Image (cartoon, rainbow, N blue to C red):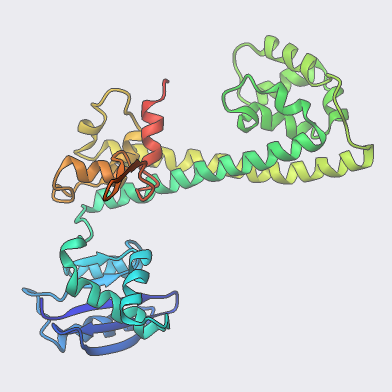
Length: 349
């Protein structure tokens, strides 16, 4: 490896630097974020012997984005250097801890030149696998947003209407269920909830697409909602009810955002050739299997052995040994999207 290229990514521009075999700055440029800037970035390595047979490798501090996709299309090796690791390498070049865009581009170039064996290029996943990754991550982000929004609404209800979360604690989804959201939209305050009749509750249950056990559920809610509970003053409670409606709208949008990408994720995952192998494991079905496929990918050369995959998922412990001191701890640096799949996979249905 005689020349390495590094790019310091930013939202509106990119700083690129070329380092030769001695670590000396060979060339540098600042490009815009667009088609013209991409052409400038690709022309920079050509001044130092970049060809289709021997492409100059590129380092960047992110593994996704439009710039990465365009660099992938050129067929050159791309190395994603973790920003934390890049910061440690920066201290080797500037003990004063000075920082600039030019230095941030030069440091990763020398990182790849000196420690190429310690870093691996981005996996060469197929286009269907990359599409599944986009859908699965969008669905997972929506689940996290729904959980966060539901926690905000639950915390708010406990400040003025603690009986409402208690009335739906038997439901697996709690106040995030469609029934709870429908009832709360009709009666956001304790006074309004206490006035709901059995006829109104049955109508709300049907509106929430409940088809069985309507009479029993309506009777249970009719007894639970008017239960004596601590309350805020009337005007304060009314104001907090309006705030609950605003949070409820956010929760409704988050719940819809979970359902829409979930169907597309399962459909794309089932069409992938590796889906049959992944879902053949007991208890691993879509969309959990789609998340596994999205994060592992279909590049067979990505992991050289099972230990690498275990470390990637966080299942392999981290050992710290120095002299007589030995500590075995849980691995914190891992794929934060793939690690939660293990808990879902291992939990009973």
